[in-house]
Length: 308
Image (tube, helix red, strand yellow):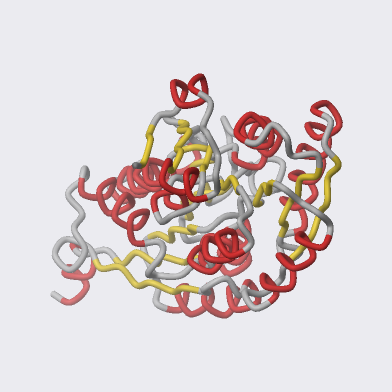
């Protein structure tokens, strides 16, 4: 009876490099995707969560903890660091993920045929750094020095962002200043360095740790009166100036759908990596006014969401 009950209520291991609180909306998207297949946490499924809160070095231990529980499937949220930890912990438990560029990050062989015990959603966010700088320059056209904040803990993504934003800066004209922050306390020093360098607008790397430190980043951008663009709408929704990227809530919903399909018996080897279904430009007008920025009408017209 116990074995039958365990099969009827599958255990799902959820590993994230981010924090529980700031990931609430995205976790809800994952649960929505599972619900489409009849899986509800605490009723028809059980989910065990492990959160690294931006400390990537904790991920391997957390991943092994989840594998030891013998889950039916693992979900790796929060980008490549979580996915790598999950892959290192098991080659047999199916893994679904949300990350930026799974092929470039060497997590899967291809989008159409990921291979092994893994599939998920690739949100293309690492490739959008140049586009974010272009949008930011339209918002702050007089910015002759711009900054890029990266996380050296995530070197592959940092390198891609530096390359793409650097190429865009070369084409658009401003001088680019790149700074890094490995930990949340280091953000203060990074913003001080940006201010000393005369940076007038900032692109922040799409990074799971930065998502976990969202509140501190928004506060620092306000303190230094630095127009800043991020990769997901949750930043301007919480008071940042703007964002551009795939809908992360929708990406997590897609990850939940992938998990539901596998729990219902789909062969993971036949499930390609999904691509985003929605990209969104979000602008916070209240923050723009506080910074003394008159948002160009053309940019407002392009926005998918304007927060008053």
